[in-house]
Image 1: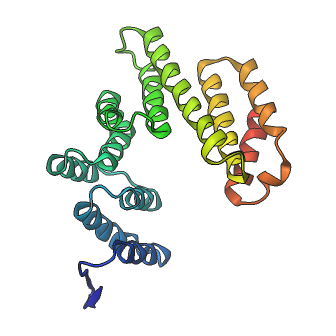
Image 2 (image 1 turned 180 degrees about the vertical axis):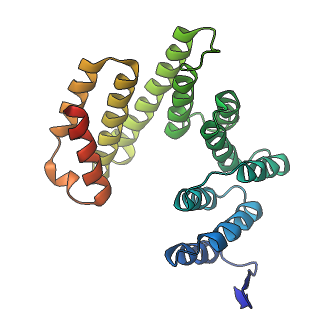
Length: 229
């Protein structure tokens, strides 16, 4: 990597070096520069999940989601139509802008290649739930039924990960909490408050040390308690 003036020039070397450069820019709160570098990186390597994840985090840090970024991701998809990270990124952006039909279409494009992805099953489930709030929907019950179907598949895949690959180690507890939390939120969305309450109670019975280890987990515990009240 070379620094000439205020511009960065990458050699055809390690992709990790480029990502580190973006992370340094984020740490120094130079989000504008990091955003430009990240876009270039996504275009150079459109199949890299880490690059697209960084671009998403940058937009969250900047506090804006622009149609310019959506147009950019669509251009990448035209050039690389099999880029699953680009499909997911575009689907999320369409969802933010309220285009749930386009969002589901993008997620299903990725789903064709990754049917065993818990994230994609969960994302499609959310889009059907969001779509059920629309006045234009013709069959509310069917939309909720599809949402529950994909959510059930998400839970199966997550539980399979806990019981086999992670073999119920420390990290498996974090995934169990994730499943419980998302299930409780689904019950709340559907107005089934008594099931949501039971699910939150189940989560609070987990070891208290788990919730005190990181800021994220303490925030999760606070959310559980608030919903419980």
